[in-house]
Amino acid sequence: MVARLVIAAPSSGAGKTTVATGLMAAFAGRGLAVSPHKVGPDYIDPGYHALATGRPGRNLDAFMCGTDLVAPLFAHGARGCDLAVVEGVMGLYDGAADQGELASTAQVAKLLRAPVVLVVDASSQSRSVAALVHGFASWDPQVRIGGVILNKVATDRHEHLLREALGESGVPVLGVLRRAPAVSTPSRHLGLVPVAERRAQAVDAVRAQAEQVRQGCDLDALLALARSAPPLHAEPWSAEAALLRAGAAEPAAGARPVVAVAGGAAFTFSYAEHAELLAAAGAEVVAFDPLRDEKLPEGTRGLVVGGGFPEVYAPELSANASLRDAVSALARSGAPVAAECAGLLYLARSLDGRPMCGVLDADARMSERLTLGYRDAVAVSDSPVAAAGTRLRGHEFHRTVIEPGAGANPAWGLRQPERRVEGFVRGGVHASYVHTHWAAVPQTARRFVGHCRP
Image (cartoon, rainbow, N blue to C red; front, top):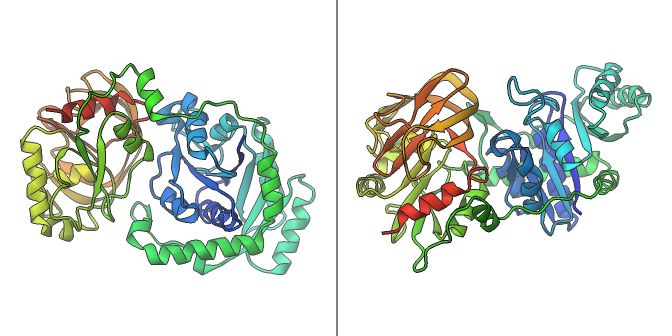
């Protein structure tokens, strides 16, 4: 059994990430092995969680992976840990559009049988905070709100008024945090700036968050609340078992084909389970940085380029002509290439007018419009990623457009928010804006690695 807490809030912007990351770092500073988790598809917050704990930040997404995988994926990440801290998404009861509680923090808390700590932005209220907390605590009796942390409290007098009001609510105050600029993390067009782009400043911010939490929160009471969670009967997920359950064939004997996975500051969006599945499927997974490395890893037989911010680094990516040429040559050879969102832009002919890899006959540019939401997808064309007709769920999150939006052989047909096809399948290349979570479709890893072999 792992002690566990879910950190939630009434809405976005209340300070969940600051509190969750600060708690992770504070408890890790006490010598506890802390397992970090994030509800939903977010890639950026888990980077700060990993910095705070020294362990991979893992996502728990009930829409993309299904409700049955939430507890096993949690148990996989938390194996051998003393405490798990799960940061929620949006407001506590907000989930996938028109899907009820699906993919909400509340649903994940129930699936994990975990107590919830509600982070409240108290900056513009006093006695009303009790009504707010009471409403959230009583909305769903299956959601156990074990305490509240008051954030952005102005003065001692303000704190007194808040505590007095909450004394009648029955929900204990487990922390009071003052406004503190040192703990803030800069944002831009898709949310927080990733750790990989500001590591030194990120280290300082996480250290400041931990100190703020240590000073303002009752860590002993929070740990006791976490330890009050009942046993969670879930078999930990494993990549090997997932491939067996999916009916994927055993890895072929012989040398393990090298699958190069893009990383570095421009490509920070990835789920830890993807690399684990590729390795279990028989690949040698080798990371490389398109901003720094002038060639692909030695012996590369397949390429995975996930999400990130190539639009921020377009000049540097374009200047690395030798790597762009290597990627183009690999794609022309028919080797499997899986590209999602940022990877799609990198494979395009150009990005904001700067030459990219030229694998796709398409041009990308920044846009004022944010495209955001879960997607129901079906594979339109056979590719190393999926057989035509394969159905899965994914997520789009970008402020760019690519023209045309789909090739002669599209990658996916999407059902929501409107019916359309998108992405490109060309030779061994599968490129799309849709982010996927391979834990939900583990056969993808075996299929991809199989295409890497001669």
